[in-house]
Each structure stands twice: as structure tokens, then as C-alpha cells.
Length: 235
Image (cartoon, rainbow, N blue to C red; front, side):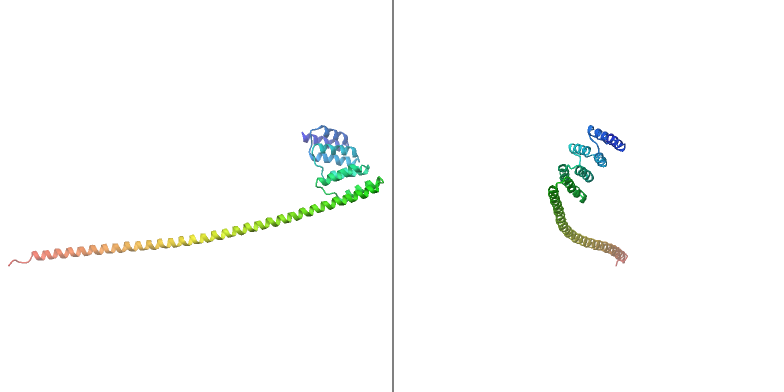
């Protein structure tokens, strides 16, 4: 639905029928933010402050945020027609939205008072604008210093965490080294035991062979003795 409204508004603006475009917008349930900005820009080109303010009122009612160019156009239109109260209100709304006016915007406000012949108001407005700009710069400076402090704290915290992690890694490396050393010693001991077992098995085999040979020789000697005793003549 918003896309259809945006297309219709753009078509009427392209044909120079800004009033019809505004009527469609205000009668609709809403449109993309850029559509509102487009209408304000078109009103600025036509020097139509009333219609531009009508669009801005619709934006306020629908909580649509005006951008920098939109505010500047509205302020310029109001100042040209001497609506300085409304121009000042728009200027303060611009500040409240976090947007920084340009030098030309300041000059437009002061020039608007001068055109009305209200030099005192022009001087007061200029002083107020300087105060607002000073306040904005102080806020930006504060935010910048706060970001730097936050960055320093975050950096210090990360350094501490990295130091702790490095210490933990060093402890783990030391533990891994001890485990590897003990495992190497265990494997070396197991190898020695295996070699000793093989050597004992070989020694037992040699002993069994020697024992068998000795038993065979003893049996042969006993048999020979018995045979010699049986063959001796009787006297």
C-alpha cells in the first residue's frame, strides 16, 4: 500500500500537481519517509510554505523523522515569509533531532528577523544560536572524550584478559611439557622392561636346552654303566 501511495505522489509531483500529491499523502495511512521529504522539497521549489508546513505537521503526527535537507527547506520557507516563531521552533526541533544546522541556516534565521525590521530579535536569535551551537560542540566534545575513555577502559580490560590468557596458556604449555616428559619416561621404561623380558626368555631357553642336554648325557652315561656292569664275568 505504501508503495502505491509513493508512486502516486511521485507522479503528481513530476506533473507539478503538488497539492494533489499532498492530498493523497494525508488521506493515506502512510508512505515511505522519502516520500514526505520529496514533497517538502517540491514545496520549497515552489516557495509554498503553507503546504510544506502541512506536510511537516503530517510527519509529526505520524512520527516520521525529517532529515537535514527537509529542516533546512522548512526553515528557509518560514524565514522568507517572516514566520520567525515557526522558523525558530523548526530550528530547535532540528537540534533536538541531533542534526547540525549549516552556516546558511543560521544566516537565514538572522536574515529573516532583519527583513521584518526586528534587529533586537535578530541579535537575540543570533546569541541563542551561538549558545545552541556551543552547547552542541560541548556535547560532541563530551561524547568524544567519553568514547576515548570507554576505549581506554576496554583496551585495558582486553589487555588484562589477554595477560590472563597468556598466563593460562603458559601454564598449560608447562603442564603439557611435564605430561610429555613423563609419558616419554614411561615409554622408555616400558621398552626397557620389554627388552629385559625378551632377554630373560632367551636365557631361559638356553638354560632349558642346556638342562635337556645334560639330562640326556646323564641318562646315556647311566645306561652305559649298567651295560658294563651286566657284561662283567662271574668268578
